[in-house]
View 1 (cartoon, rainbow, N blue to C red):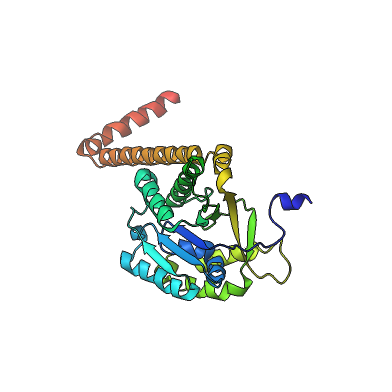
View 2: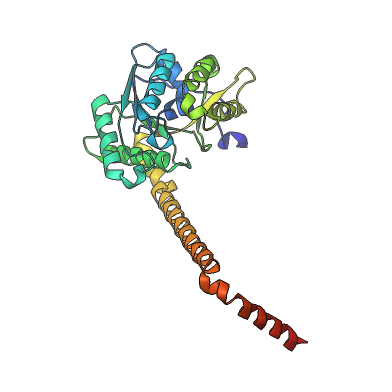
Length: 292
């Protein structure tokens, strides 16, 4: 049926032995795939490593407090390991070599057969940067003659923007665990109702699934040999570059507008403007007389 071209009509859980989850900020790992991580944690002989790439310092409070929230969520969801890096929050796109090097190191160390990362359709610049870097690193591995056979697929998750999904995972059984894990991020819930928004998205994702499915998480999965073709089809780096350039231009125009406004304000409050006010009034009245 044509509907299944747009979204899956069945839930397909993940099965893996070694999993690496790449999260740009503390909380992305839970918002994007917390229910799925809780499911995977219940499997025997599985190793799950969550890598928090920045400490989220741009959206306080103290970075250690945000990481502590992720540690409490980890205890609830039950996965084995959480690692924290200190890449610059909000500026990962301008630190691409360091980002790619960090991702490469974790993939080499843990040799996962399943990698979770944000999607290329995310609106946050750090989310997009992590997605692009992950795909680029995996693409290089797939093309290398010594490419590791254990790197089988990448699963992109959604946080700030719905993705084009090709896999749905029923998280009805772990929904309460995900809700409890999200509740640990009080510093972020004070800023935005991420719990209500993300869980609303998860409920919507059950639209094409059976009636007994209360919530689902959506992913776009790509097998290792198909990553290069995926990149050539969607060109995420070109799209992001266009977005970055447009964003820079908007900032430049805003700065120019502020400068012009400041100059106008200075003129209107200047002594010369006040002194010449009677002359301007006189000239204005002269023009009105001439028109008559």
